[in-house]
Image (cartoon, rainbow, N blue to C red; front, side):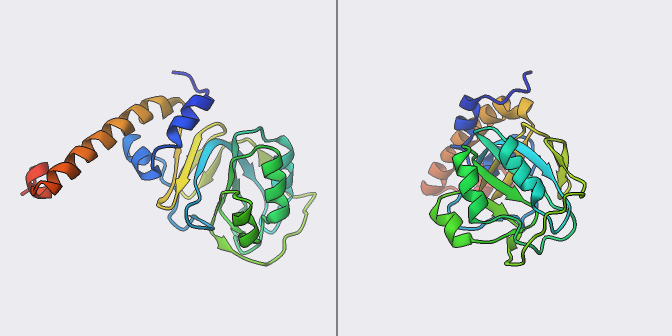
Length: 208
């Protein structure tokens, strides 16, 4: 099974709700529920470009902006202190110019209005105006495995997010997961039709 996540697979995955993809993958990869879009309706879908950086510093995010490829989604672990505005409109502008598809950060951001206006998807732990520093001697890494919550995220994994939440699916499982997701959606459509016809969920699913 290939571990390369093609553009076609990403486009297909983007049509599927995050919850459906998570369920179809075997209920794996659900990221913590406190990570939310900064504006309703934002959608995140792309290859993971992972970032590890020290708390209170956004230098590694700037380095990622210079290294990530078009179509990538930046996923950042910024240590134990989320209470900084690690990302703002300047960085969002840079990301859009590089063809990046969004940011997922286990920390806070700022300039929410500007980021929404430029239609750059950001999922974060919240909003915070507190400024960061540039710790040039701080430890960090780009495109190495990281952990968000208790979920391992590897470079190139599929990252999908919407108003319901976020899921990370290993690249080699995406094609099969998409197939299962389509089957799941077809089954749910059938269930809804039966409910509209008057059946109960207990009858449909055989629950007592």
